[in-house]
Each structure stands twice: as structure tokens, then as C-alpha cells.
Image 1: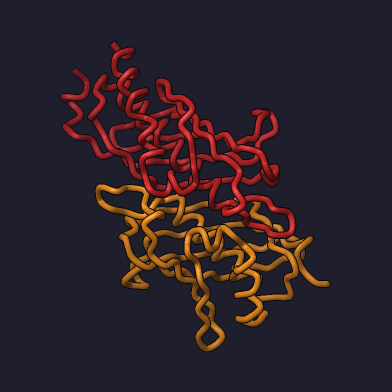
Image 2: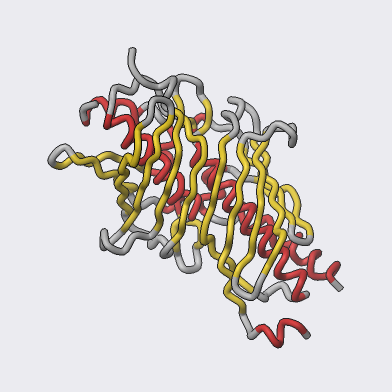
Length: 138
Length: 158
């Protein structure tokens, strides 16, 4: 899938716009960015991004990473996922990159890391299994 | 009396979700809180659709619902154990979510959580997301939270 095709699909996913997610493609590598929005705050006192929003951002990134990697025509469905929170999300842009650990015939295993200032200091990680059986081809 | 502290929890709990920016943006409503238990409702909205073909809401919105309701259940467990409303803050350490089926488009999703164990540092919580029938869940969640206590454990026990 090309960047334009991915942008076209993300534009049709309201949740991606709701939390402010955009794709960045450099040297055919996909990085997702979640632009800072006041409405993504979960703790106004720190302040910090909502953990659920960070999880949701990584879920969008996992789906985008899968679709970018192959001939998807429908959005893959999450089966089970685990989100680990490592650092609080500061009120600024957040980045994520997905790697497909295994693409099987029906299920794909995906790992996502999210970071802010420093890629080597991730704020959260996601490991997930996605049902891809009904989402690929024609 | 645990009753007094739970009355204070009832007064404070709606702000725990309805008073924060992401809670407001999603329109999540407080439903109930009890000792180690909490329930919220996430109304259907076209702005959180995740699959344009089916108009099913995105898993991320359910993640936020389950994270927030689990956090309140953990807080409600800790404050009732210590009989002190200001005892602690919790931060999500880990969420494991299984998605059993898509949420029905148009239906409100209910998130209900139970904190079944707390230690000095960690709270363990299970939560279910459903759209009317607890026996036909949309998603199930197991979460752990880091507890930051306002004062030392010895004083907590008194």
C-alpha cells in the first residue's frame, strides 16, 4: 500500500482524526504521529496524555502498519493486545512505529513502540494479535 | 466507616471521568462506584468509528473506557481499605484487552471494573465492556496499576 492509499484510509477512520493521528513515510518506513490536542489529556494536573489515548494511538498504528505492509482492503480486527505503560505521556506530539513480528495466514502479531523526545525512551509498548483473514485481497 | 468514604467517592467519582478532557471528548458518563468496583458508560458517536465499512467504534475508545473505569475501581478499593479519600493516586502499568466481538453500532458501551487485589504498590483489576448483556461481552480487560500513596503504609493501617 502507498502512503496516499494509507492517508485515504486513515481519513475515513474517524477515531484516527479524533485523537489526531497522521502517517509519516520516510525511505518507505512508516512512522505514525499523534499531534498534541488538549482533548487527549487524561490528567490535567500533571498534565499528561490519557493512557487510553496512548493505547488507542498504538492500536491505530498497529492497524496502519499492517495495512501499509500488504494488500489490505478492510481494516484488520484486534483479537487481543497488551499495552505496557513506561513513562507518562507529556502534552506534546507522540510518535509510534509498528513492526510485524509474524504475518500468518489468518492472524498477524504486531509490536508497537510509542515515544516522544527520544526514540530510545519509549513511553508505551503494545503487543497485539490481529485477525487479518477477512481483510486482505480483492 | 467505609460508608462515609464511599459517600465521598460517589461525590468525587463523576469528575474522575467527566471532568477530564479526554473523558469529556468521548462523552463518557459516570454510572456507579462501590468498594473496589466502578461502572462507566461510553455513548456511541460517529467521531470514534474505527471501521468505516461497518461503522463499529475503534478499539482505542474502548481501551480508554476500560483504562479509566479500572483506575476508578482501583482507587475505590484503596480508599475504602484505608478509609481515607485522599490516600492515593493510581497510574496504569499494564492493560491486557481481549476483543470478543465488535461493539454494536449505535449502542452505548458499558465498562464495569472490579479491583480484586491490592498490595502496597500495585492494584490488580478486571474489567468487562458490554453493550447490554454482561454474558455477551465486547471486550475483557485485565489491568495493573501503580499506587502512589500519600503517606507511609504503617499509617495507612491505623
